[in-house]
Structure formats: structure tokens, C-alpha cells
Image 1 (cartoon, one colour):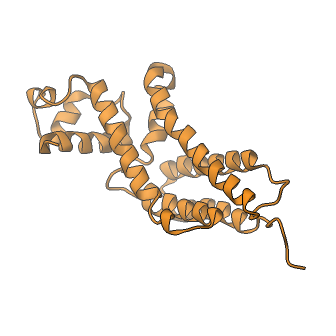
Image 2 (image 1 turned 90 degrees about the vertical axis):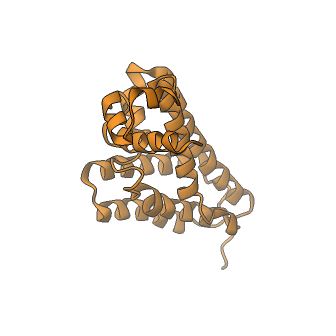
Length: 200
């Protein structure tokens, strides 16, 4: 990928994280990337095309940060715990790429009414996250790590809601202590879940 194109995407990623897609002007993008309108339109047909490239880059970073080390772990519950730790330490605290906080939350809030077709693209990521959590919980249940009476769908929703809540609050207060407390609560919950067979 051309260096200028990479820079436009990366600088836009940071700007969109801070200000949102709709509130970021073309002039701000050009200034941050150090280019002209001609330089921009040599690589992107429109600001909306840039949105999709930024969304792709944000997803790549999300996967790199959050899925790190998961392949080395066999236990599905332990995978979720490492995922939550990555989410807390590697993703949400990544001020270099996302100085304004989670870009997906920013997009979701601002685009749902004004640009629903873009909001639907963002929502695909939330759906994928839920599928990942539920798949790992189902694997744990199938292997005896969770009891037969455990509702994996309900736990998925609880974890998802907890992650979203922690993300929103961190975007507001930037408190590492509060973020750690919120995510640690989810990890503690997973630690306390009873296995199917207990040693008597």
C-alpha cells in the first residue's frame, strides 16, 4: 500500500476515534495526513470510501490486539479470560491508534440514525464478537467445563454488556483503575463458574 494512503488511513483512524466520522472534516484529514485534496482523491473516491478502509484497519488492529495468544490456550474459558485481559490492556488502552477510545462504539452511536448503512457494517463486528464468546462457552459446556444447566446465551449477553459498559465508561473517564475493576469483575465471574463434575 502506498505510504500516503497508509498515512491518510492511520491519521483518519485517530481522528475518527476522537471526533467521529461525521464530525471530522476533510480539511482536518488533509492537515493531519499532510496532503492536499488531489493527494486524497488519488487514493480515495470519497470520504465514505475512506470510512470503509479505516473500518478495515480498525478491525485488523482489534484482531491483532485482542486475539493475541489465544491459539496457545486449549481451555475455552481460559481463552475468554485472556481475551478479556487483552481487551483491557492491549486494545482499550491503545492510545496510539485509538486516542478517543473504542472507534466502534463511536461509530455505532453517531451513525445509527444518520448513516444506517454504515452503522450496519459496524454492527457486524458486534455480532461477530458475540458469536466468538458463545462458541467458546459452548465448547466449554460440551467438554464438561460448565454445567448442563448453564445458559451460554445469557452469559454471552452478560459478558458483551459488561465489555460495552466498561468501554463506554473508559471513554468518558479514562480511569485505568475503573477499567481494570470492570473487566476483572467479568474475569472473576468466569473463575467462579462451577464445572459440570465436582470432586467430592
